[in-house]
Length: 165
Length: 358
Figure (cartoon, rainbow over the protein chains, first blue to last red):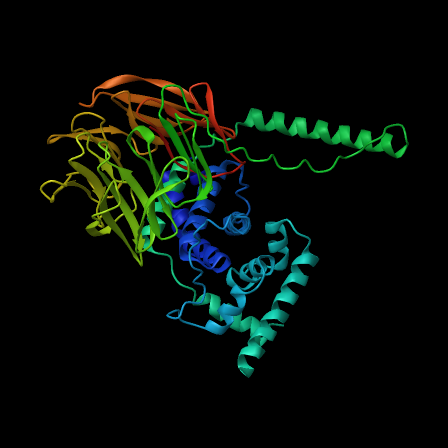
């Protein structure tokens, strides 16, 4: 980390390779689109490396990077909501038919509001604690906990409906 | 305690798809370009900073005591609101048009005073004389007139990630992210006769030779390839892979390439290594190769003749975002500048890409 902060490109490349996969997967889980995940994760690293000089290297890099990635994803998705209807958005593919795993659950996650989806992804996809999520999103811990609880409740309901159908 | 649903969520996210290798390489390239060296703190400076911090703490304690005694009114205002983004481009003197992508939104202004702003795009390129702009919108390559009218739209098999318009305007080379591959196409400037050139390339913007008869791109193995559109032939440039950037000179055959070893210049069969890898941007400026190398607060722009001979250097205060044929575009704070003229004010922390002046 210290070498990367001093501008050592090899050290920065090692840092990138260590965290790229996790950052991309977090971006994908929040945005639900491959193409957007590419942009969000790349933007996240670009911003993180540009701001490496301000980073306190006694702290872990991962949560700081995920904070940048999560906020970048939120910014872009919020901006998309405000788009005019002339836009041609990419098709969401969070639960594509060929995807492995629990498609019903992924679809239910994709249906969560942005605010709830991001805390669920950071908690269960990235493994951050509510306290870390609160710091990353600049929210009170209580808000994070209540969003998590409501998101889980909504997911349970969605899965029950799916089960009944 | 973890519930069944929570365990399912963890397991499901653990099975999430993997990023495409090509996207990672492009992101690494961008991230390394953003890297800014930080000087190691000096002992004297550190001591001064500690003394300053201690003085501030004492001041705050004193103010707090006075406030508690009612002798001083201390108030904290509301958090300042974030500055509203200004994204209106200003056309530099002598240019036909200017385009930039800020946070995935395209801004274009042309000489006629017409402009586009706010369209979400994945890549963009101005046509010669800035009559049109080709942009990746959704899964299509679209040619937009500066009044916003769509001249034509061509469906692509994925997101368009790089576009290069030939200097004569007759052809456009573009790269599509299709599935797990990047695919190179050439289409006529009027949107017809789309041809697939290579089904495995890297997401590096192609660069056209001045005569518009050939262009360079980066193949799937990371090598630079020059494709002759007349003869439909390929020539591999003998520079070590991976190549991460390409720029043909605006006249003649000289091709500048950026790779892990820095910038190289190839003309005819002559090869010359020009600059170390740590650079912000490179391109052709007034017929000379300009290589911008980052410093602590400013960039140094080294100039070279097409044969590789050094032509001196100059300094730019800020981060060099692009080298265009007549201007160096520098970002200083939130402002994108060409010389002393502000082209664009961007939101704090915004990502700026594909800045072009035509």
